[in-house]
Length: 587
Image 1: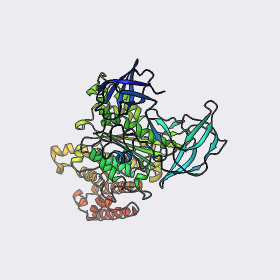
Image 2: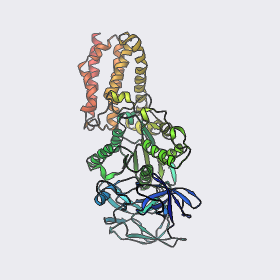
Image 3: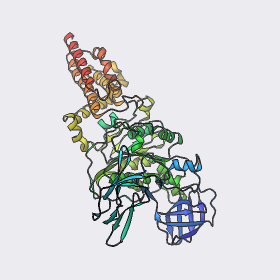
Image 4: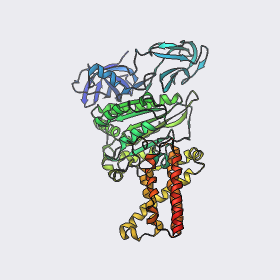
């Protein structure tokens, strides 16, 4: 029987209810006569504090509060892909048809369509003994994706009955399990799972393969492994959102979950308009066919923003349990932390640094720890890669959200406002960024590059670091005072910056660079450096080397050579080496 009480006090999105003994922490509740959705966050005797996920304007003390008997959960089943949800998994396209351009208070609609039919193909049979996570059958949800119908993690038994191949709506029973203790359990094409409870697995595995993003500075210098955790911090205008878009569009994860957490409405509008138009780079099909969007803009209720990242990561874990590699883009976790701060203030909790609650660090840890490569309950190998954008005020990386995030991620792509102001994108600073996944992905890269990847990246980074040191010397004595070999370092560093690290997201060729093309481009620049060093040692001035007409081609390779014609890069290398040899002959 539902537990019912009454509203006692209201403070913004936080409501205190009296006479509700029996409610549990994180229980879903219906608040007020409008039945607004809320979640229990504190219990003291017969009093409960509830954070409401909708606008609380118009609520009055004395209105009813009803417990649901279940925690805040998401529906997991066919129909997730191509969907656009708010922070608590309400389908925004369905709500628009019901209430117009704005979400009406108290509107309720199921997350998954109850009328759409799915073609179910059973893979299990009567008499099979199954445990949580076992695959009962498949549904071809989109042309790009086969949805595996899973037994809920907390259910097991022997199959007493399973549906034949055919078309079913998700509320139809497709399997009956006979358990030792619970009797017969009916299973449908979907199940629910609490968003704050990580889905169980057998074993967490070490990462091994890189998440290929097609962005050269990321894949080559600061890679992230599938199942890793990444932070992208940067001030306003440094390109966090466009970087997240690029990763969502081009990464080789099989499923993308994009969480717009507290972002401006115009940015989310761009996401909602462009994602359906983008094509999957492998199949040419619409990218949305393997994407779930969660849109929680800055003008939506702050409580739903706090819940949105848990909604997203739970959906990602569900696809992981099917054996897929999933990538989550959370843009941005700073807005989520601000929601946490506001709710903490409403709850009258003691603030910590900069007003954030003292449990900010543990909450961030809970979120990022849900990344990982695992062996699921059904023995399938899957991964969740978490990529969280951070928006430190004024670009200050010493503020609490950035500092605490660094404790839980192993890759840090630091966006630099100085690079952004010079129109250098992605504006990832190669001197302050780092990746701790290099050792994990080295074998993968070595197999592709005949063992040359690590030494090539070290050599290139040495040039870039040497350039940074020489800038101080140039400020004091001028570039003309440098010896020839150091002038060459400055030129090669410029070549690396403009011909390799920079990437144009709007250029049809340069927007994505395959690993093979990335290494070829890097090899071309390092080959030039090696041969030019020999020429300089024989007395050839750097000014003559840089005046070679063929040298202009090396800056254009990234935008002139398509990914399927990378052999053209070898021709450019050979031409430049030939010209260098002729210079040596004339010296």
